[in-house]
Structures are given as structure tokens and as C-alpha cells.
Image 1: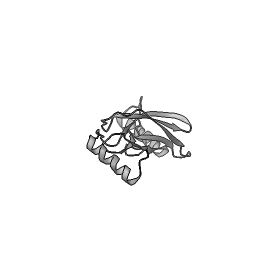
Image 2 (image 1 turned 60 degrees about the vertical axis):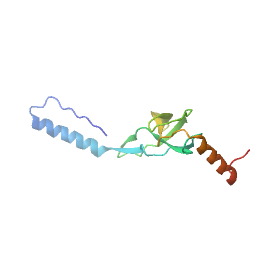
Image 3 (image 1 turned 120 degrees about the vertical axis):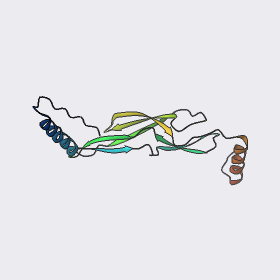
Image 4 (image 1 turned 90 degrees about the vertical axis):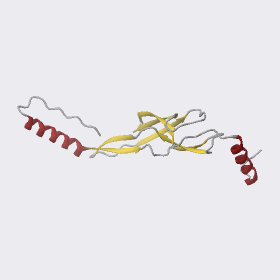
Length: 142
């Protein structure tokens, strides 16, 4: 939470410092921030077609925090994840979707979604081994 306090028209710096201090104390006593989603929050796990890893976690690119007044009820927050077409290779930080955060059913913020790990294209031997394993375990349907 960032708070800016400005005091003008006071005769000396001691009075200005005192007023700013009391304003900041009031702000921190009345408001709090709640971390709704962090950059480590897993939004979804998707399968990666022809990647070295079969699955990858989708995470937000940045933290999502919500400002609440301490005397009021906490705000109801939800999100909607829209995925884009994924093309390999992917690096952590590449945009793979859009995350829309809603607070009390109103759009609060749109941020990018990314992958949690780097994903490289799988070579032919890796894909062959993976498909062969799926055939023997019965996980693949023709």
C-alpha cells in the first residue's frame, strides 16, 4: 500500500512532520491490503502439445492486491482466465493469456497470465516414447 501525505502552510518543519505522521497513522489504521493473487498462485494447469513437459502451470505476471477498509466487510473478488493459442518454445514471462479480476462484480484489473516454467519443444524420441507409454497404459484412444 502506498500512501502520500502532503501538508502545506505550516510554520515549521516540526509541525509539518507531526501532521504527516498523524495522517499516515490514520491511513494505516483505517485501511489494509489483501493479496488476492500472487505471482506464485496457480490459476490453471494446461497440457502442452509436443512440449518436453506435458503440463505447465499458468500464473499471473504480477501480484493482485485489493485495498479494504478495516471497518467494512471484505470485498468479494473473482477472476476469469482467457487463454491464447500457445506456440512453443515458451519462456517464463511470455504472455499466454489474459486474467480479468473482478471485485464486487465490477472489472477491477486486467493483467497478463504467463507460464511458471520454460517449455521447450520435445524431440521426436521424447514424443515417440510418450505416445508408446500411453498406448501400453491404455491412456490413448484411437
